[in-house]
Amino acid sequence: MRPTLKFSAKFRSVTTGVVMNRWRQSVVEIQTRKRQVSECERAQAALSKVTACFQQMATSLGSNMDGSFLREELEETRTVAHKICSGLHRRLLSLLIEMEQGQEDKEQVERLWVIFLSSLENFQQDLKKVKVLQDIFPLTQRRDRQALVNAGYAGGTSEVAARAAMVQTPWLSVEETASPHLKNHILEIDLLLEEMLQRVNVPLWSVEPTQEAWVEGVSTQDGGQDEDESLEDMMEVEVVSQNNTSGCCNHHNCKVGCLLCLLS
Image (tube, rainbow, N blue to C red; front, side, top):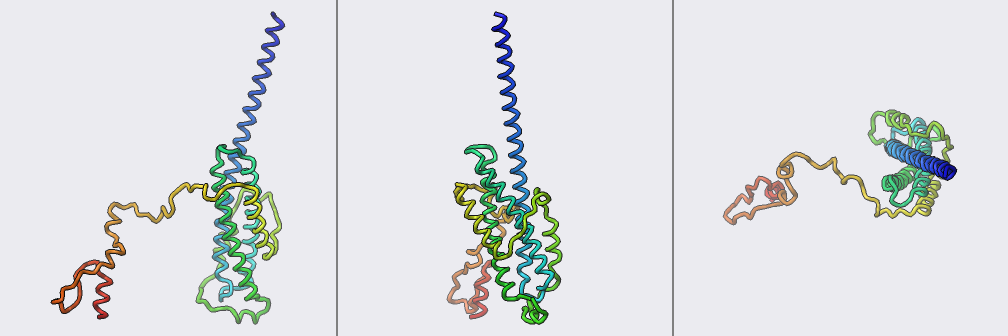
């Protein structure tokens, strides 16, 4: 009986050790995944800031604010955006391929995936616009500035470029990828979009937002909706009596009616 008891105790000890090791491994995997998801969230926020700066600077191309400084800042901003896109693309693909259905954080990763797809498409449109404008206004010689359009802009784009340069992502310091030529960059985004849509089966209509659209534009004041004039109120015109020779109504909301009265 003693050997049997000794063997049973040893077996329980080994079993407990295996269970504890699996539990520790599971905890480490969950923590690692949460850290990766958090990194992707910060990277997506950084990408939105950088691409917004790129879009704002692109509006000055071909105008009297255009010049070598703007072209250099656009190139540097495009390089930063390329680094963010490359890292975010790899990490989102890895997370979505490895995560199982119903797993924690999966909906959050799918939502990031949809936002990233939209960001890539918008950024690609801005790249195409920049390429066209740079071809129209090459600025390779001093006389090329005579073709610039005087749009009446004042100031410069240095503040926008500074905001783009200050954006940081979790992996920019460790991942240095060479930015391709502008034309190749546009084609590369096509390949990224195609790869993401082929390797990940996430229907776009199945991803739900976390908040209502235009929440920041909704008034929270009581009675604010009653005070605002609706389109129907503004277009309301009272029936004017035939005996009224002035032809004007007295409704306080009848702005359009008053204009018609003045013109008649």
